[in-house]
Length: 216
Image (cartoon, rainbow, N blue to C red; front, top):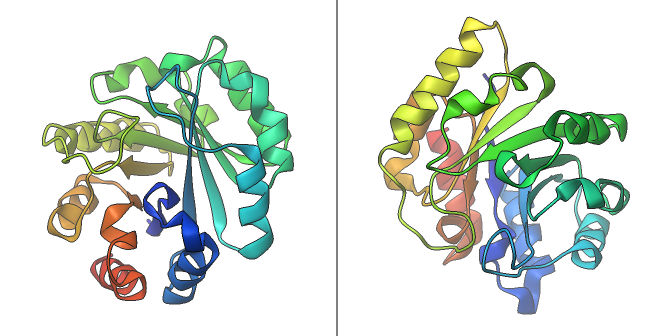
């Protein structure tokens, strides 16, 4: 499967966000990961629609919008109108998961579902044929800079087996603690969309992106 790098701007320097995004894009990143946190589903609060609208104006990258919010169905139209290309919603936060996924796809966007580290893959059985991507959190959602949870590797493998058994070419995205040191591990397990935050935006952004892409 084709592999994609999705740098997470949660780790970017917001005093020059546009420049950080430009460097990542010019170095070859294909996606840009955009974490929306509401202070309810997760303790942190990040950013919302006005920032996304601004980001859309300065980049052609695929905007990969991860809604870590309660009742995400309330805001699908707004995030779509602000320029999202992919919207991923949490199984744990959504009252009507199939209906919300359908709403995302009706806006012409790719739809994804996310589960936390302790949520079993089996809860997704009923929606695997309705999603373009499954995002497995490999840390607890809500804070950057956490270490990768080692048990995530088997979870990625299990999900890839589930998809293969159904003949689905669904993307598996991983988010949390991904660095050059464990990148090959998650790729070998079956992930093909890689979210990286501090591993990209700390230090030389251009070189970091190029290093990741060489390994992918």
